[in-house]
Image (tube, rainbow, N blue to C red; front, top):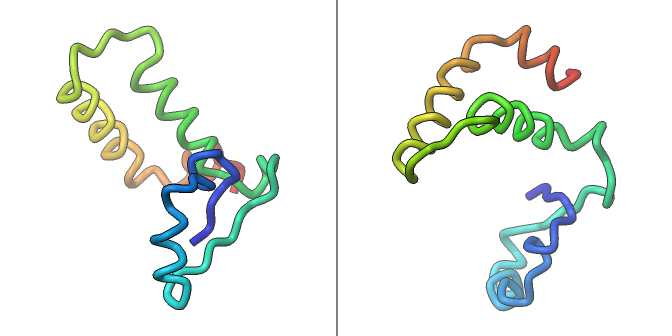
Length: 87
């Protein structure tokens, strides 16, 4: 599994699980600052700008609906995805 170096990915609570599954899971951490190889950050930025920027969503159901709508919107927009994520 490839992960960024977010503190949550190094949580001590995960140690027993990781030790128990060390033969099945290998964690590979990206460098601490690697914007050119961590494209998910660009996708999150695009999602936040589209879904929550300057909007008030009343609850989890509205947030989920807005996120699903965004994902459906970009699903077949390969060229826009490549452009925005610099692929």
